[in-house]
Length: 302
Ligand SMILES: Cc1cc2nc3c(=O)[nH]c(=O)nc-3n(C[C@H](O)[C@H](O)[C@H](O)COP(=O)(O)OP(=O)(O)OC[C@H]3O[C@@H](n4cnc5c(N)ncnc54)[C@H](O)[C@@H]3O)c2cc1C
Image (tube, rainbow, N blue to C red; front, side, top):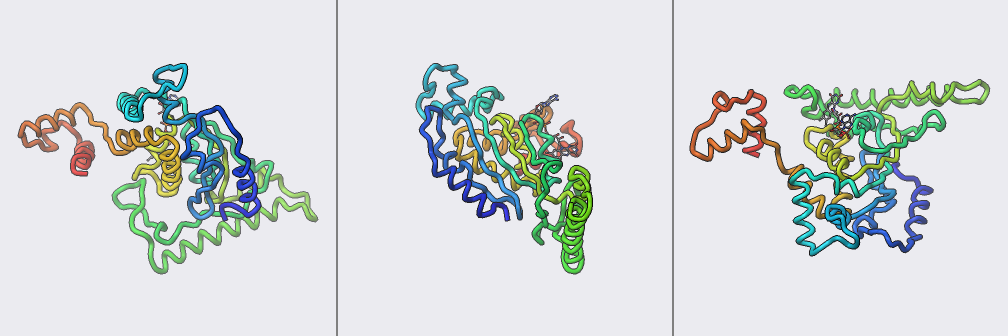
């Protein structure tokens, strides 16, 4: 279960105690504060705190004394301009702090994003909960035959049942031994910092993760992308929903330029120009490698 009744009561109490503030408040984000959004079977993301809103991006860009914003249209135009021209520092003026519960193998991918501040649950000090990520049957996929870094069709029949049984059984057995090793009833009890090495990578961990909007967009572009592993992508998707409510203009520009847009090399732009002039361009005459050409075609053909 992602959130216990006791934890929910804590969240409800926090949400019931609103305090007036002079700081910028994003209405869309206030609705998300503290609430947990379920991800995978036991995970979640929840917003602990945030700083800034769309207007804060414009204020920073204009280095203003007061509101620094003009008409909504004008502000949106400025935000789109900043995004289009990689003028990134105004986006760094907004920050978000998330509480994330995620499987350890997802955390390993996530932690590669170095431009955030992290504080993780200590498995030296505390005992990890008996919670493991077990994929839904349709996510229990075979190795992709075309992409070494991906998955293909879902496993079926006896193989699917056996794999599920292994995942559940191995996790349960490892946790039983973990619990037995640290137990101090009638024995010394192995140190928690050592016993945890017996736990599988699908056990859940938790952390607080704070990042500015520019670096969050970088994370989301990589991890909400179709090439990212499903298990991290669902976290990125959940964060995308929150960010869309927090900074709607910035998120819309991000969706358009980063998620929906594409980078073209000089050779690719040359090909586009030649095609527009009526020339038939092929991979052989493009100057691009087969891989580059395949990706170029997929950008053009959607
Ligand atoms: C689909 C996919 C597959 C991947 N496969 C692999 C893999 O097989 N093996 C593997 O090891 N990793 C893999 N990664 C991880 C990837 O290589 C990056 O480590 C990860 O995406 C973090 O990106 P980043 O460094 O740009 O992010 P951040 O660490 O958030 O950094 C953001 C930006 O800040 C700058 N920056 C941050 N720190 C430094 C620094 N110390 N020096 C210079 N510039 C810095 C860089 O410009 C960087 O792009 C994969 C990632 C994805 C999305």
